[in-house]
Length: 223
Length: 102
Image (cartoon, rainbow over all chains, first blue to last red; front, side, top):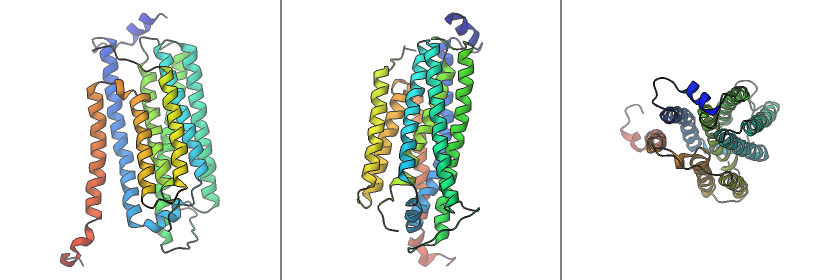
């Protein structure tokens, strides 16, 4: 299929041209991401309020986090953002094979992130840090261990929601790989690759804030 | 609509390297004892990283004004959410002497 054929085939009748169609889908995708920012924003606001209210418990909870896991996962996500941006770049140039390679690398890095997160979650389970299931916290400072449980509830809510987004992203990447293999994209029409790219980077963006908030900022404080 | 400029592979690799360096930096700073500045420095670094991702990886730098307005609006409402909520929580004790429920 030639470039102009994919272009004609993918232009919806209610748009004047591909340029207008692309501007519309880009804006639509950003609007969706804005709602996502507000969705995660609610959890970030709860985190902020509880940290200010139960500071000592928050420090104690945060200090049980293993920074190396979080740091490695941050690096993994940043690398996956690079491969994602390169697959968008390749798709725009109409390089199908390069697009596929970069998408596969992104997918592999995404699963690496989830794997490391899984190992971390297993550690929380072993250490009795899962709220509602097996929570037991040996407290040594001036705080209520139930407040540490709130920390872990928010930790699991935020990282869990983040992981759900990663899993959805992995599904979208798989869909792109299939569509790319079928020759759906060309240098003229590649919006889906670009939109999934925006989503993937957004998920990276959330982690960029989760990492310091959950792992780093209380590392050296006294609970 | 005008043809957008697009960043090169070199730009992407430079942004990627900067993000990794900033990650290493924020982990290093966490091992220092800085009191309240631990949070301030960590969140400042996170915001620089977020801006790099937004501007270059998400190509906001090359986007239309409409898209930029949407993103700025999101940040504004996020601060509104946190700001108004905190203005409630942080000031509850202030008027406890006239609080009819106490």
